[in-house]
Length: 175
Image (cartoon, rainbow, N blue to C red; front, side):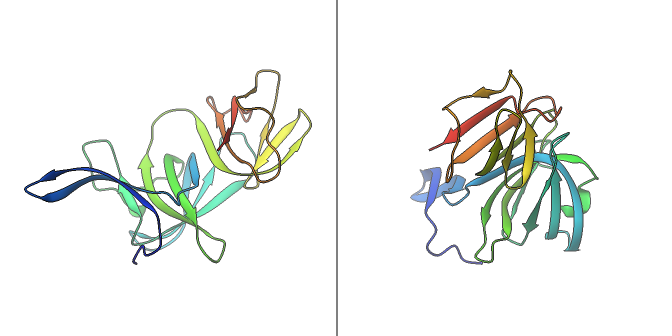
């Protein structure tokens, strides 16, 4: 697929007048997830849908993987695709909305830390009890840190749950 009309940010350097691209960041990637992945369906090693869950938080997010999705694995850049995702592998996903409202993964990254994270549109907050982002609900307690105040309608928020206990450790409003 072509990325016509997308704003991109490219990091790289010139070598013999050729731009060596080190990193392309699609500015459209407004969604990020770090969660446990299960492959719901695949029609090939790089085509399918994964479902992400977030520890003890309730709710899941389905993410579509297609030919444009970059698979990145820090472990010596091993070959990594849908076939190699074991149930509940921890995966970090950068994603964007498709025109039909589905969520398309721009990149997948195998992770091995404990924490869970979701960045997306704020849905709702039940006063002091829970907070919902993209239909995933995290509990709140006195230890939840609101970095830029209490989110409201239209805000994008990044919620982190460092230990997977279902309680948001930090909630940051993204500008």
